Length: 205
Image (tube, rainbow, N blue to C red; front, top):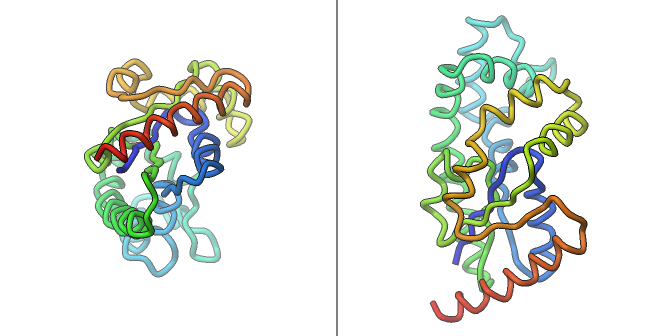
């Protein structure tokens, strides 16, 4: 059984995944896979470099040939058409690798596995999941965490949050919800409760 885990930026998806991992549940992080597909030598990076060497100079590549993520993020958040183009290049490749990673974990005999993805719904990756778990926090907390974690100003943090799926829509599409606005003990208790539920569902399947 595959549990899709999502939430807005800085909602604590990785923290939740590590709490499940402590209970013996493996996980695949779509962000990690997204980084893999734009490593030097990957076809996606070549396409990105070619496009922006014409449009933006060579600013999307660092001196060592790796992707300058901050520069690319500024471009795509400022222009929805560029964001759509980037997704058309990366999303199919990400999905292909996610399937391979998930199949490997399932073959190892785990009762269920997590697919952790910030774009679970937007990218269509939710179709790969049997249930969708949303990690929810107030937007004000998202903005504060994003500004602190990513070293961006509050306006850019607000723009990043605003560019994502609205909180209400994510919650409406959730099968399960974890409230990550509290302390660590409360979070772990919610994870333990869901772990029991998912193991029971997996046995029934």
